[in-house]
Image (cartoon, rainbow, N blue to C red):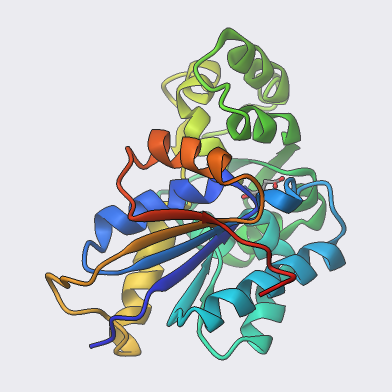
Length: 268
Ligand code: DGL
C-alpha cells in the first residue's frame, strides 16, 4: 500500500476536469495538483517551451513525493509525454491515447477533435486515432479561444455560446459522429458544445479513460493507497494567482479540496 499522492498538472483550471474524476473514482488517493497559471496558456507556446515548463512541474511533483504523474493537459501530453517518461523517476500518464481509445470504443467512421493550436498542429490525436483505426476520418479543429473563456470564468454566458458556435462551425459542413474534447478546459463547456453539436454526436471527455489507466497502473505497480485512507488529502498549487485557482476549484470541485497555495517553481 502506498499513501503518496498522485501528481496532476495543467496549464490552468482545465486539469480540474481530470482531477474531479480522479477524486470521485479513487476516493482513497491523495492528489497534488499544479496549475501553471503563471505561464498560461500553453496552447500558443512552442513545443520546447511546453516541454521545459512541464518538466519543471514534474520535478516539483516528484519532490513533493508523487508516486505517479498524470499530465491533465492535452497540449503538454502532445509536447512532453515521452520527455517526462524518460526524465522522471515515476510513471507518467497522458490524456491523448486514452482519449483516442474512448472515441473509438464504439464503431465509428468520423471523429472530430478540438484542442489548442499546439495540440492540433502537433497531430498527436490524429496519430493516436490512426494507430488504433487506420481508416478513420479525423476532422481536427483548433479552438484556442475557448480555453480563455473557461480560464476566465465565462462559462454559461451567451458570449461562451457564441464563441463555441464560431469555433465549431467547421462541423456544420464536415459532420462527425464523435467529438473528442481534446483540451481539459473543454469539458467545462460541455453544455455549450452539446447545444452546438446536437444530441446525436457523442462527446468524449478523455478524463474517464485516463482514470481507468491510472487505476490499472496503481494495481499492476502496487501503488494503490489503502481503502478508507484517513490521510487522504487534495492539495492544489498555482504558479499564478492563488485566488484564480481557488475560484476555479470552488466552482469545479465544489470546494472539495484541503489546501490551495501559490508557488514559484523557479525558487523551488
Ligand atoms: N488545458 C490544456 C489542454 O488540455 C491547455 C490549455 C492552454 O493552456 O492553452 O490542452
